[in-house]
Amino acid sequence: MPYNRILTIQDISCVGQCSLTVALPILSACGQETAVLPSSVLSTHTAGFTGYTFRDLTDDMPAIEAHWKKEGITFDAVYTGYLGSDKQIEYVKSIVNTCLKPGAPFIVDPAMADNGQLYPGFDDAFAATMATLAFSGDIILPNLTEACLITGYEYRETYDRAYIDGLLDALVERGAKTIVLTGISYREGYTGVVVYDEGKYSYYEHEHLEPGSHGTGDVYSATFVGALMNGHTTADAARIAADYTVRCIKATVGDKDHWYGPKFELELPWLIKNL
Ligand code: PXL
Image: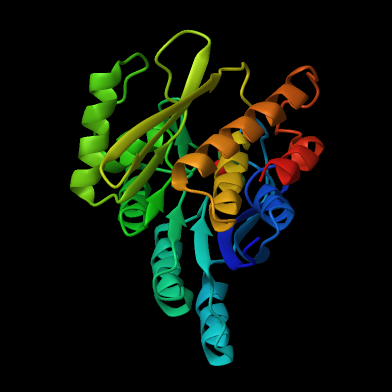
């Protein structure tokens, strides 16, 4: 198993099973050294809870970058998720320039929206800045809503393969290199992931389970990065991440009190075995 040092930059939602509290254990389970840069600390995530606290850590970022630079600390991959502000995105770009090893992948999950809507606290200006980060990445992991927001492509709830092809063209035109587009459904009861890599389209279909809980996108992205850094191809990493995410949702759906995040911990033994 290749052992890499990965930096992941996203928030800590203290309660809610998303972002860093998902990415760190999953990447560790994937056998990867994982460094974290918390973009902010919230008492809970923002989807379904009200009155959460929000401590912005943007202003800490330049000093953290300077210290890493002084220590000569570099990373074999950088993977970003939920970020809190435009200024933060500019700092993230600088950290990637300073600390990512030459030729190493920069993976961006533009985590900011779902089901046609931006998460609370985000606006179109933020989406435009997130687009600049996404298109500077080597691999992007948007859902359909995020892919539309970063390209300006019309969001539709129902669509066909021609619509998705048009969206992929729009992403490539803006500068996307490798695209892993999640939550694409061509028939009732199923959804899947489109991988567009070196001009080739592939699709991995899996069961569609309702209700999908918040944080499943973060489970998906962290698992994708962990599998990729274990040497799997983009398409294989996308498939492993899909299978694991479906298992996590299945482990959660029966428990109505556990609406706020996926019980991903229960399926970590499966992930470790199937990497
Ligand atoms: O990527 C999901 C996520 C991460 N972090 C915070 C969130 C959400 C989704 O709503 O609110 C703070």
